[in-house]
Amino acid sequence: MISIICADDDPDIQALYKVILGKRDFDLRICVCGMQAVESFKDRPSDLVLLDMEMPGLSGLETCKEIRSLPTGATIPILIVSSKDTEEIIMEALSTGANDYILKPFRSAELLAKINFAIKKRQAGFKTDVALSYTDKYEIIKKIDEGGQTIVYLGKDSSVEPSREVALKIFNPAEDEKSQSEFKTLFLREAYEWSKLKHENIVELYDFGQSSGSYYMVLEFINGKTLWDHVEDDGPLDEQSLLMVAHELTLSLEYMESFNLVHRDIKPNNILLSFQGEVKLTDFGLAKQKEDDKVTITENVFKGTPDFVSPEQIEGQKYLSIESDVYSLGATLYFAATGELPFKGNTVIETLNNHFNIVPSPVHKVNSKYTKDFSDLIKKMLAKKKNDRITISKLKDSVTSMLNQYQ
Image (cartoon, rainbow, N blue to C red):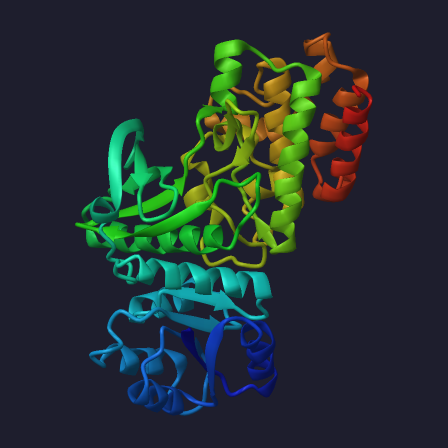
C-alpha cells in the first residue's frame, strides 16, 4: 500500500485529504505541522509527502528541506500545496526540492493526477527531481524539428506499458547568467501551467526536467501537421472541415477557462492536425492565470508572429481574459479559410496598428465557398473591443449549430 504524509494546519484541508485520499488505496497520515511531518517521516518513511506552504513553525519549504536532508528523503516525491501562485513562490518551491506545486483550492482530479504521476515516476526507477536525464529514460529516434533555441525529437518512452512515442523538446538557453535565470522562470511557468491540463484537444505534457545544462519537455507525439503547414501545403480548408477544427478548439479554450487560464498565443503554428483527424492545441509558453502580471506581455508575446494577437494584448493590458484567445482564434480561422492574414502589414508595427484600424474583408468575399454565416461569426470573434466579442460559450453553440447543418 502506498503511504502518504499530508501536513496542513487547516482542519478543512485535513478533512479534504481524508475524503479524497482516504477512500482510495493509500496509507494516509495527517500531520498538523511541519515538525510533526518530519518526525513521522523519520519514524516511518512514506512514499510521498504533501506539504502546506504556510504552516506555522516549520513552513512547507523548511519541512521540505528537513525531509530532503534525511537519507531516506532524498528521492521521495514532495508536493507543495499553497494558495499563492506567483512565479517567485513556485520557483522557490521547486528550487527548494519540491517535485510539484498544487494551488489551493485544488480539484480532486488534479490532486490525484499529480500524486499518481509522481509515484509512478519514482516506481519506474528514475530520480524525481528536475535533474532527470532524458537519455536514460527516452530513446531518441530522429530529429523532427528545429528552431531558435529548441530541437524536437521523436522519441520512445519504454517506462510505460505499452511503450509510446513521444516528442522530446530540448531547450538550450543562452549561456549568460541573466538569460539562464529568465529562461528557467519561463520554462518552469510553462511546465507548471501545462501540467494542469488533461484534455483530448490539448497536447499532453508527460514529463519535464533538466539534463546536462539543457531543459526538456516530454510531450504527446502528434503525427500530423500544424494548421499553418496544412494551409500552406494544401490550401484553405473547406467550411465543414474548419468548423470541426473550430469546435474542437472551442472545447479546449472552454476547458482552459475553467482553470482561469489564458493561452495568449493561439495561432496556426500552435494547432496540430493529426493524420487520424485529431485537433490539438500546443505550446503554453505564454499561458498563465489571467490575473498574473508577473511576466510582462511586452517582453514575451512578440517572439512569434504578431498577426494573431488581440488589441488588448498589443496594448499590454495586465489582465487578459479568454476573449483575447477568442480573438486570436478568429484571426486563425480567417487565415485557415482564406489563406490570407487578416491584418498583414509591410512591417510589424503596421501589422499591429492594423488590428486597431482595419476591418478585414468578410471571409465569404475572399473565399466564395464560405457562407455569410461563417463570415459573420468571424466578425464577432474579431471585434476590436473585448466586451463586444462573442463569448466562448456562445461561440461553441454557434459552431455546433453550423456543423449540425451539414448532417
